[in-house]
Image (cartoon, rainbow, N blue to C red; front, top):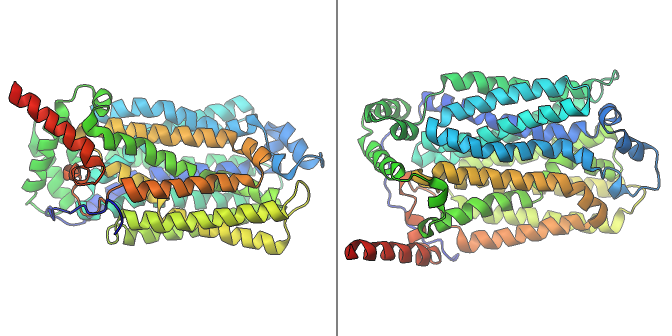
Length: 510
């Protein structure tokens, strides 16, 4: 038996079912993930388009087309080029802390609305850009949207979903990320064929379509019962929403737990400071470790730069975009499979299987590129096909595990009193790592060459060990009762119980 998995569910299930109302509300909210995924897919695509490179990054275009002495691995090494991708994530990082205050003080709905509006403005500016400054300003506005929606949407989904199906509802966010990514790669594949050279404008501006859906849809979204209880003195308002989203009048048990959690939350005046307390040490560790590991899997290397990687290996511009589309569809298919499995098998088994499915392909890809791809020339068609299959296998593993579960686990393990603060740390770490990797990847590719796949593969092994020993199972545990997973875990119980005993001793002494 795996170490630390013996966490028992108290089998407490609230009344209710999946209603059409809650389903539609969560679909609108989760659509924020479409924009996130769309941007990830669009960035790598447009940066491989000749008209885009020649207009905004002529130095990179010249190296790619004219200087045959440049290594295959260094053709795209440009800090200005990577700033196009990474500027969005540093803006998202900063805005996520403001989003935390909005989410905590005003609710989840306003945060989603602000994110949608910022996305619309950023997409419009990017599509109309005539110089690098307009382009980067558009990226910054997209980053603000990203910071707000990534902070609020996972919380919204967790709080709206019935506890029995919470994992499946949270996977919807990653499914929307996958939908956005696949849509972007398909659009890139079509727009690259526009001979007039303005295809990249269409690619960037089309982000405005899902952004408008989120911005307009957010106006009609109901606030979550958790947030209503937290921000008003009338629990009947929350009860009415709870009855509507659960499809039953008998919601008193869930309402009582929400009120109890809210009372604990209101006693906390400084959530970030309280998050540093010892009793929240497991949650603090997870709020940093899980998003860190999610990004150090190497997924952004594949997602952002898949077209550039295939160009590096000798594929043509159109073929590289098609290959990126194929890998994205494979990953999305397995994310859909996670919806079925996450609440049946649990989170930990999927982490284990997915980790193995990512580790082996990365080792093999690194070995093939080290042996067969030098500084000049390209891979043979046979080896290029093998690499494509291995990347698809890797994407399937990520879609089954760290892709959706990185958001599922972090959105359900935090008690209400620190939930918005902890989620902002999750988003901040996620975006920080995304920014760092996006900014330095092309430099790493130039210097490490094929070794970059061994680098990320080693991290996959480390994070798999971390999950095995330190992450308890959260399946079938109501979100308001999640503290029990730490009290019963073989390692974390020493920290949490010691703190509880210390507090009890102080109370008795007083």
